Amino acid sequence: MRLNFGLQLEQAQKLIMTPELRQAIEILQLSSFELNNLIGQELEKNPIIELTEEDMEFNDKTQEKNNKEEIDWEQYFSHSEINYHGTQRDISEHDYNQENYVKDLTSLKEHLLFQLHISTIKAEHRKIGEYIIECINNNGYLTMSIEEISTVLNEKVCDVGNILTLIQSFEPPGIAARDIRECLTIQLKQSDFWNETMDKIINIYLEDIANNRFQTISKDLNLTFGEIQDIKDLIRTLEPKPGRLFESDNEVRYIVPDATIEKVGDEYIIIINDTTAPRLQISNFYKNMLKQENKSSFTSKYLNEKLESAMWLIKSIEQRRNTLYNVISSILDIQKDFFEEGLKAIKPLTLKQIAEKLEIHESTVSRATNGKYVQTPMGLYELKYFFNNGIENKSGESISSRGIKDKIKDIISKENIQKPISDQEIGNILKKNGINISRRTIAKYRDEMGILSSSKRKRYK
Image 1 (cartoon, rainbow, N blue to C red):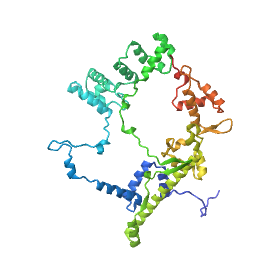
Image 2: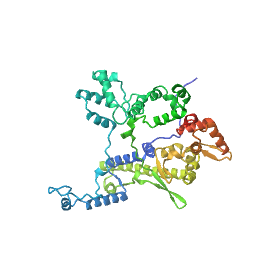
Image 3: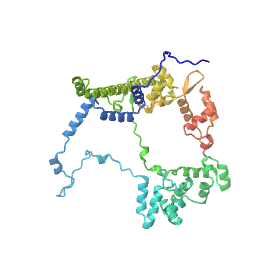
Image 4: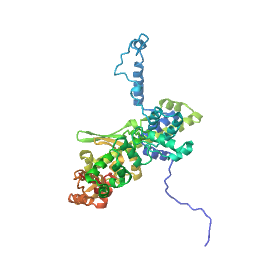
């Protein structure tokens, strides 16, 4: 075998990810909130970019309106809230200020600390209570044992236990428990429902009562199935996570739809929400400066660099808007029956179908629908909601998985609660309607909807 060195020409095609192409892909997959943040950053970094004249005119009108609403000091002092002469200000219900819109949110720890500080305990014990409260998680459970807290604070175990008992008497009921059984016990004791029978139910038969295994409980505690059912209904009224009654910063989500579908007459129209991506333009001031500057100057090179960056950003945002419109339009064409008849009429749809219809790649459709929302006559939906698999019925028509879930939910809602319908019976009912689906698939769909099995749905008189 001979090895030779030599030159050889070869022609090949390769996809090169330029920075501009990478930017266009990133902008397409951004949510409306992330895109607005990106535009705000670019407006600060790139002096050539500015908002369109429509947006600027709106800002000018807003500024003009604010100027007109400047404070009339003479009128202000004549109607002051409480002036030095003791006269009362006439407060109008149309007076708007920031305080009218700010909600005072109290966290769980602040609520518990307030109750601790107004309690009649010794000052040296207050630090124990404060440490215990700091060890309570967002669900309201204590994350450390009494012994661990005693070791950290170098305090007696009995003192820590007494302070914990005090905190467990605070609102909300069930707070500072170490497990679900203690949480339920605290709430039942505070509600005066605690007795020997309830003690055995919570500490011995809690899993049995949750799974509707009443036979063992009835035999051991000499209770009828109806009495056990009443106890289960009482336990279900308790709060398993007391801490979630208080708002957390992580729970707040604001959704601004990227587009709106409206029905006008017999047709549906799509309106892209421009507030999610304000239109940008090139500043006329810098355009004129570029014409006047020497092309070889440092200023001209800097402005040309910023101009190229601005043009790519504007083009990418406009391309995002067009892609989003085309994808929503294709979804509307296929899922039009959904907007007329509801969930039962939703059709199976995949990313590949939309990609083939628009002659683009599936990944582009995925990026265009990820994290994007649309406001419709049926409510607010994420675009990915309209994509789902399905099966064919006897007539050869495709039925989406969401449509089947809706039918299963409807069948279960009409069942006799004393004799719930099994998954096999649900399958037989669907088969009569032309939908041939296995029992295991029904069980899977039922679990996805959070519906219990027939044995756990059964109720006793």
